[in-house]
Image (spheres, helix red, strand yellow):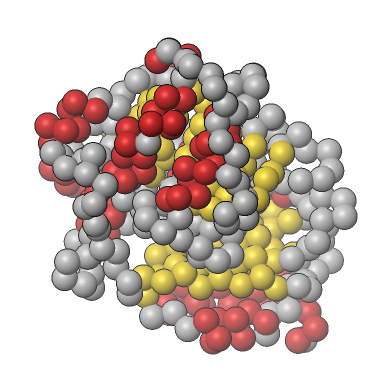
Length: 363
């Protein structure tokens, strides 16, 4: 990334990051700590990531972002000014299709001198964290250089019950939301400000039914004491093996719900903000039940600010860098809008046409 931001963004093209780790022979305490940030779509993982990065100033940290679709947005939502590096893995789920690229990135990072203090992996909301965690125990090179510190699961208090009981999920398909909760070492019950006390207690009971062991933090905007979730050595392999005897079996397959798809597109030009707001509001009102997650980075006509919208089902927010949300466009940076929707029954052509109609040249 060019410009004045000290955040160095590196987009890893598939198959290019193949540097093997060096010959360092660290003991357990010297290995780089790793935390896996997981949680269903729209739970607040990137918000947690930003909070943890702000709390980790002075440390050498690398961030690995996994997005489900071919168009990435989350890298633009990581908003921190420090010495992190951000690696992106798009168009696949880190627990299966792009897992090999995760390993290559970890190999490359292991060769850094001085070594990193921490690696934060943010999975897509459709990932099962177990195969990701497995990577740190079945690959000898990675086991040698990295210590899996904890799996941190963010739970959306407003929507989690609907995702746990998903009647549209095909028979035999894995319920990622349940897997993410069940495999957590620490759970952030997020967005508790959006539910009543009775709803919060109901969610807490259901989460406890899935995972009786993890400590639960009730949070708003994913704010938690970083010392309670980082550097805590919470992942216990022996305890996992007692519950999941086949955890280290790399031949075990899991099946995702193929009815959930990602639709993303990058659009040059500028949006008419009034038409854009109306389109987003109408879309989420009419299709919000089927749109699990929506997000975008937008160029708006008449403004040098970079706009960001985020939605979870029918809830949506739109903010700009002028209001302190996210970073502004950098000098010389192409002002390309990127929009992503994840859900069921989405028509790419229809969505793209409707958003193209919100551009200024379509006035």
